[in-house]
Length: 117
View (cartoon, rainbow, N blue to C red):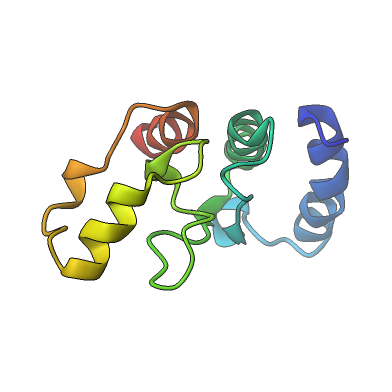
């Protein structure tokens, strides 16, 4: 079980190492973090991670986004499995505007909120 405190404890050795070696916090990047968008609690996990990274003043980059062969981490699609019409439109090349599939959902909101800070 990872909650915010567990994540902070898990990442604390990186913060300590950086301080011990006089590495400024803004030189640390947490990259390629993510979670399958359909996992229960994925939105809270992303929010907690981003919050911890921000507390440590680290840069961050989530993984992955709009992968061409798997949509498990396409957070724009929300927490539910993609509807067949999405895949059909993608296969036919009819999906020309990604905003057509963007939905309001907790996963996307967690990332947007983090990016807007």
